[in-house]
Image 1: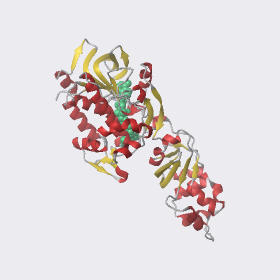
Image 2: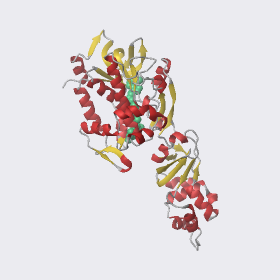
Image 3: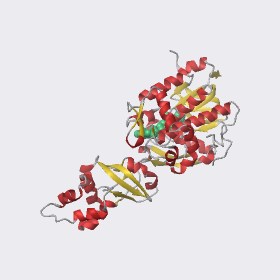
Image 4: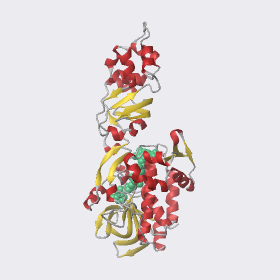
Length: 424
Ligand SMILES: Cc1cc2nc3c(=O)[nH]c(=O)nc-3n(C[C@H](O)[C@H](O)[C@H](O)COP(=O)(O)OP(=O)(O)OC[C@H]3O[C@@H](n4cnc5c(N)ncnc54)[C@H](O)[C@@H]3O)c2cc1C
């Protein structure tokens, strides 16, 4: 079988223009989910497409997401789904209306991947892996004539030409339209190192600073907590910045992490204090009454356990973080319902599941085309939106990838890219 690139060349998508410069209809830079979806939209519109990826293989972060089951999307009605993107919700809502949870499901099924809706409405491939999906997807793209170049690192523009470092040396590509889908700024070893931000800022594109999102927070635990590292705390209600989330967290040597923490990370990273309700659904007065029962010869630990029925890790948190509250039943109950956790800041950005910040809405038109560079579109996590885990990240990457790809295809046809309206 001929390579995808050979097919693309044979199909006339890719013509050589001198030894070092190539000419394509559409160039997609970044081979993650957003870039591949942009390529799919462009190929579907009949455009010749070249995907250039810096790493030796495509979709490395997608494959990493597959290690925890690949939460593709969430079965949730449109307005509730868009609301998860907080300030970005109004921007993304019309884009998600074109490709939301239902479309993500149908797209995955179209690739032969059976999906199911798990607890808390999260949608996963039945195989809980990304590799079969990525394989089927790249096969379908290659069959549609999409060409791929890996180990091609985009270094910026020289005039109209996108410049790349490749194993064969520097080269350039001239494209009628370009989609940048370069990812955020975490897990740099998977390719998304955020180095593009300097290039775009230099081209006059407004860039919001990167911030860690869906990230753990540091806590300086006393030695007594060591035997609880790795223990899940659930159910727990997390309270920060006027918001409450019922979920779970995990105590680790470095602090706390897990879904409940990630859901509030955007508030916690701005310094909102965190409190835990370790006994959600239980009345403080009832807890105090139980704790006031005569203790007899029972140790304090046994008394707390029997009176509250709470897991050892929860009681260890109480003792570690507010030992003074154990002085009487009323203050113990109060602390169990609102235990302050002293956070020492987020974990380093490279450990974050996703990053906020990136290309700002004001720098793009409604078709996701850069105002500073007509004919260049942006998609995926490199855009300045934020969302918790739960399938929101991949759905927005796929939706914006498709939207940017469609805009680029319209641009190639000389039609408005959908960006006539100013949404900034
Ligand atoms: C551990 C982990 C688990 C996750 N689990 C989930 C989950 O279950 N559900 C979910 O919704 N999301 C999850 N995510 C987040 C999700 O994987 C990302 O949001 C998504 O992959 C971003 O897609 P993207 O295409 O925008 O960027 P990326 O997937 O990061 O792809 C960007 C691509 O651009 C390439 N690139 C960068 N710079 C250059 C350059 N200069 N030249 C050429 N190529 C370049 C990179 O190598 C990379 O391949 C998880 C993330 C992590 C780290």
